[in-house]
Every structure is written in structure tokens, then in C-alpha cells.
Length: 378
Image 1 (cartoon, rainbow, N blue to C red):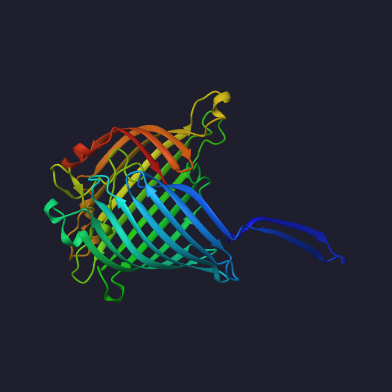
Image 2 (image 1 turned 120 degrees about the horizontal axis):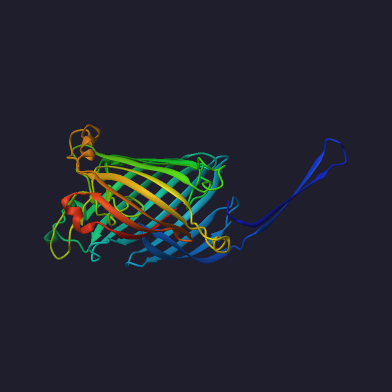
């Protein structure tokens, strides 16, 4: 529950044969804590400073605030109240936030989001329910540059259900186990703002079939897939903030961040991606330990990998059910192969890849990436 620095248990026999004495000794953390940390969001490194007030109530409640700034000019503020247990297996969280994320191209445009959210999650389970109301703006964008007014500013009131199961042996570079996450979002709650439903599935499976063979015991086969659809409701149209964006080491290797999918513009600002309503990606890879002498291998846990991935991100006109239009994904599919290094870091998994894009649309030509360095959050 995040309020103890150390917990020690001692078990001893009681006076009677069937008696057991259990002594639990806990050392509580300080009431106030100021800390710094780093994280990665779509390849952008961020520095965060946070303050925490612990156990100010009677049930391990916490109040947290944080300020973050990114290497590309992004910034954010968040205030959060956490109650670890409201029942035996249910936690509660409420937060108010404001953040602004710079778009990779052009940097003069930023995604600004201000809102409030409350969440209920299972302490020992896979389900989390969240309600959020937020106002989204594209700071620095204008209709003169080709942006649509509905993309530049929008309000969202939504309920999100997240289901997650994870058996991976390592978060950064797994060698066995599986992971599956499904996120279902329904917007327009209370008749407020944009109206749509959106579902995204992310799955991974890792297997080391030659673990008993000395020469191949570190080799791992991995398969990763993503699939998502967005369906507008009530005659509404989709917004930039809600569409899918693809490209980058964490999404589709061989293509620059947010470069895959519907776009506009070819002028000074370059080609601008606006996102799609249906996306799919499949990645297969083979990884293993670096063939280093024992004297050097003990200093690094980096691994090499060989990969191939295919994917697409497409626009689907509003109106007809989006699932009936998902066949568009297989048209003009993007694909690439490559090899590189996987390096675990405190920020996430650092990938240094040599990529060979095999297929892309005309707008991808200037946005393909042959040598790609990216940080993948875990």
C-alpha cells in the first residue's frame, strides 16, 4: 500500500502445540516525501518532480502532486488522491491534471489536455474502471495550416474499462510468458462532448524453445500484436486526440513516430499525421544474449534481436460500422525488417535498430527511418 519502508515477520511456537505466534514489525515511511524520476512517453524523455503526503487519514490514504517537463518541450502537472482500499479488493483514485505534449512534427504544435478523472480498480484482479472529463486543444495549430476546427478543440466525457493480465518474467526484455491488455472506451457520457466507442487490444507472447540446449538457451521467439477500432456515434465525427497514431520503436519499427496513417500538408511544416480510426500491427522477432566473453557479459544484460513487422493505420468514414470497413487495413500495408540491440535502462527499453522498410505509402517515403533509436516504456 506504499506507506511502509520495511516489513519483518517472525514466526514462533506458542505455549500449546497448536498455537503459532506471528510477530509483524513494520517501519513506516516518512509522512512527506519529495522525489525525482524519469519516464518515457512516445520516445520523449521526461523529468518529473513529485511530492507525496502519506497516511494522513486512517486507511493509508495518499496525496500526490507532480510536475514534469520533456526533452521536446512537453510539460505537465498532476494532483492525485489515492485510497488503496475502500473494500477488501477495491481501490479508489481521483486526479486533476493538465499536460501539454509537443508533436514531433511540427514542434510548434502541442497537444494540451486539462481534466479530472476518478478510477476504481481491483487490488487483486485484472479490471479497472475510469471516468474522465477533459478539454483538449491543439496549441499553436490554426486552420490556415490545414487543421480542422473539430481537431483543434474538443471536450470529452468518457468511461474506460481496462483488463490486464501479465505473466512475463521481465518487463523490459521478456524471455518467456505472455501479456494481454484490452482497453474499451465509451465517450459522450451525459451527452457531453464527442461521442464514440473505441477498443484497443495489445498482446505479447514470448517463448524460449531451446532453453535446455547450451548454445541456444538464451534465444527467445516473440510475437507482438495490436489491433484497434474507433466508431463514432450519433452522427459525430472523430477527433485527432481520439484516433490511433502509429510509427516508432514502440509501435511500428522502421517508420518515424506518428508517421503512419492519414495525413495532410507537404509545405514548410512537412507532412502532418492526423491519425486513423482502425489500426493493426504484427511483429515477430528472435532475440538472444550478445556473444560476449564471460568477462564482459557480466557488465551488460543487453540482447540482440532480428525482427519483421507489418502494420497499417487507416481512416474510416463515419457512419457505417467501422468493423465492416476493417478490410481497408490490408490495403497499402506497411512493412519492414531489421536487426539491432535491446538495452534495458531505468527509463525503459532502449532500442538501436537498423531498419529496412519494405513497403509503405507515398507519404511514408520521407518519414521512413533506416537507423532508428527509440525508448520503449514498460
